[in-house]
Length: 292
Image (cartoon, rainbow, N blue to C red):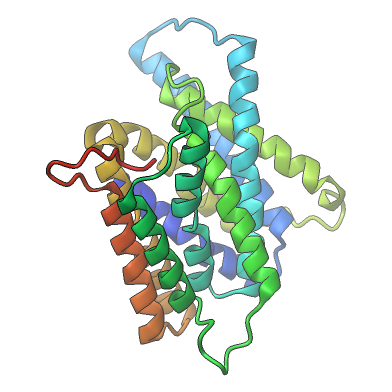
């Protein structure tokens, strides 16, 4: 389940690139994804309630506000990530998004007021080396697009906040309800940012052309699969399995978009995957806790 959820996320950037090639904008892509995702989760909530014939306790307004506030980071992540792949290949965009691994270590350090262990520090250095290789910055013939890199790092920053929120805010509530209000918070954020674009120039064809794909693989399947699978794997193993998002994203871009990924980039990607395993695997006799 965790592997399928991560693979779903890995497909998104390729779909977005294909939507861009047809003339659709970031506003159209993100709004269609989150609106259809919210409607899909709402329908699933209604059907599940009828299937189990339950009468659940209403969720308090305070819980709803907390979840919607946490969902802001999910909306921002999509905007920043999709902006980055406007300027960068998908294979570079996903590597930048995965900087959330070391950003999560820093966040954990501040939240728990505890310095990271030597294994986490080593993992961070490996990630940085892998990122340098995977983004091709050592190749002289490559012109580095700093605008795209800036958007990618902003996406990683907001994704870090999103991962923390998804695993800590109102965790006692049913997964479907949590996902529904998290996505609603993201939808409102996107609508506020892109409200000038919602006019006569907005192409509503996006809802049928790409919106369904993006909603299914970006806002419906992954939350449901992660909330079901993570309790069975645990956070440590779950984080390792979820790293499959990187090769899935790169391979999708390679085979569908024709993006070229050289040996140095693959080496960098392997180093990042190795660092995720190193950071989360439990070594015998080790007192370190798996990273979030």
